[in-house]
Length: 204
View 1: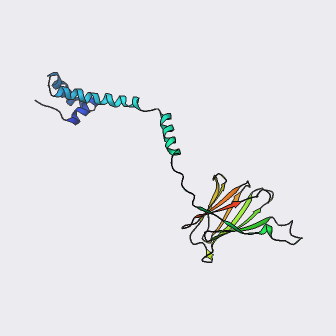
View 2: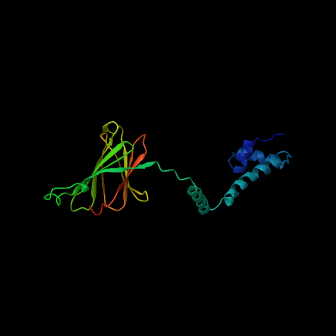
View 3: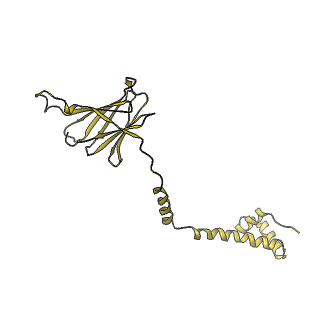
């Protein structure tokens, strides 16, 4: 007596087998085969179980809430930046009486992690935007920084509002609108990032 393999049964219960095979299976079942009858009942339950699987899935909104809960529990990465020291500020230098009111730019130099960050700030009237032109230097080698450095301008809450990459000579340029306080983060390969406070920009 002829019996059928598993792949034949799976095609039959899915309605994917040919008409000739369908007829053979139906005729065989009609003969009352005691081996194939339970096989047919077993494989017929598989599509029904698969169709009902969707009813056991949790709602999408609950899945999102659970995922959000795991995201919040992730450990916070430790800070890997160094606060820079101010070593020069042109606004503290005495100027000649005739040029005090004419200057619209100022310069500051910060130092940390063996880097010197030289920055010049200025405005182009009538725009209130500030132009920052700077250069990152390697103090130990008395040369420009080998490899490009990434420069990020962010708020106190670490919201990045501008980013750029220094050139091969360490130079960079950022244009932004003043708000207090702002921070500049200089990321150079092989060192902690250098964090520089930019304060009192609105009063400049």
